[in-house]
Length: 329
Image (cartoon, rainbow, N blue to C red):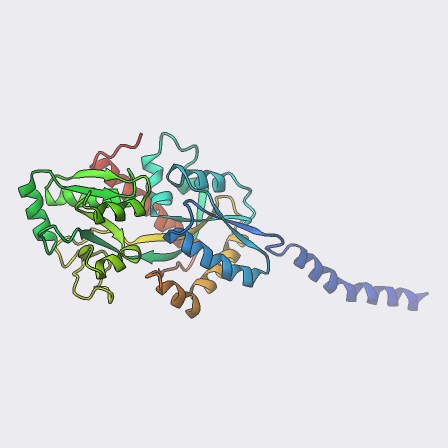
């Protein structure tokens, strides 16, 4: 009998690690497909980075990471879906400066959630350079000449944006205020595509537009770049000065895209997802792939660091909205 008891005890002891391993495996993340929301239609910068990230996470996690384009309401539809989703890691979102920093102020009266409170930042993903550009027919070669021309025009120049309250709108609004000139704002409902069409057709005489979508037009001479928003001159446009070199240091947005989750995501899971995404984004393969779209990988060492950045961005853009009396109805 004693021998039998010892044998049973030995068998139970040996089984414990196996049971623990099985339990740990059953609780591992993820166990089913992950939904990755994009607040815009397919084809734009936010969609591009989301699809590249999803493809790599598919390989790493071994489950489907499904890109879900929830366009509409300036990105607010996707924001609300994620904010109200279960905080289990199976609903994530690639957001950007407009959706997760600016909309909190411009749509304060219509949003049912508060993005900086109801979503949590996992990490930044990329930054995208922009250019201040004009039609080739405009007789200016730099920002100084643009300002002089605008003064002589007496408010007859137009500037285009991707929509009322978007960062291309706010950035140019603060630029013309600093330059003490007047221009008429023309918002395009079709976003960046509308801006591009507008300046190519001379409907507008100034846009701040991402370099990836405009570089071919600039090289073909159908647009004229006056300044880049990058801290240093871009290798694609070595003769085009930066905003700082042009006398407007601190102006010009380098649009960022980041990964977000519902606010109450458990900390261990948040840390786990952050580590996986960080490893994915910092791989040379990913950097090389995104560089083809002129995207630079810029990540955060922790979710806390990124969340602090988001809070600062919300405050920064709130001041811009108030200072320039921007109203979005």
